Image (cartoon, rainbow, N blue to C red; front, side, top):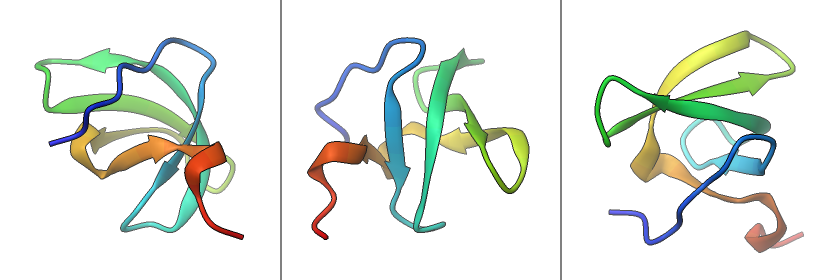
Length: 58
């Protein structure tokens, strides 16, 4: 489970998609979030797959 609390506008990295997006809001339950990805518009994803984008190794 993720230890991070994201707020609207945070840049996040999705581990499985290997893509950076913008956090929009939590969705339905604590396990899901809405993220705006450049390749997909808004998408509902599992929050546990998200980490802050600045923590992604180069």
